[in-house]
Picture (tube, rainbow, N blue to C red):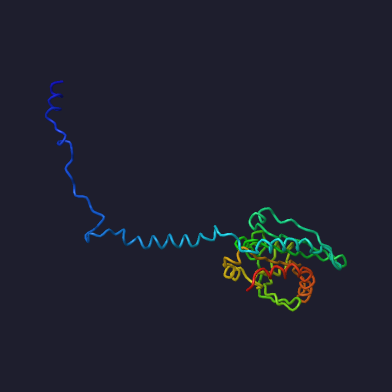
Amino acid sequence: MGFLMADLKNSSPAAHVPAPQNRPSIAGASGKSPLRFFTPVLFSVLLLAAYQARGLFRPPPPGAGHYLHRLRQLAKTVPHNFGPWRGRDVPLPRAAVSLLRPNVDMCRQFTNIKTGQHVTLMIIDCSDTRHLAGHYPPNCYPGNGWKLLSGHPKNWTIKGVTITGEQYAFHRGSFETATHISVADFFIMPNGRFLRTMKQFIRDSGSFRDRFFGAAQVELVLPGDTLPADRVKLFHEIVGKNWKLINAIRHGVKP
């Protein structure tokens, strides 16, 4: 105990405080803090992020809601039956509905009661252009087992209006049980434009004003052995019967 008390008496607080050490300064050799060089960069990054995020909090432009409501009402008036064609609605897969969040989701299979021929028409209108990004035949069909054979630009004319799109050919199955289909595809923008490819769609759908008016995609699926002249005839016959809806989609905003 005596030795312990002697040690406590002989020790002073100063003896236990480590000697001060030289610590590096953030000021550097010049005496100026390097943080001052990062401040303008950080401010610019924050300003850019705020500019990009401003669209998340903006309300949709005036007229967008009325336009989208009108399209939904028009879609209800498109006839299922006309001439020798009888149509029945085919529900979209839940995964597609969840991804697209469509304003109009019309997928209709038509049967010609005279010839027995089957064709399928799909019109998908989305209330936000971002929801439609990535949805087009070369991306979607291979995910369902179809192999893309070819694709080339194609123009059609209905009521004096030229529609620019793409004509695709796909096949599925083995040599003995192969199935071939032909797909006519095009995008409709609310400013009146028709687009051929997803690359064009992504390039032209970035406008904040137009984004909330959405966009649409149309596909006409035919048997792969349909002759070219018959493909054109069927396009005019089936797509033309839906022209009132298609024409309304392309008149959402002024170019």
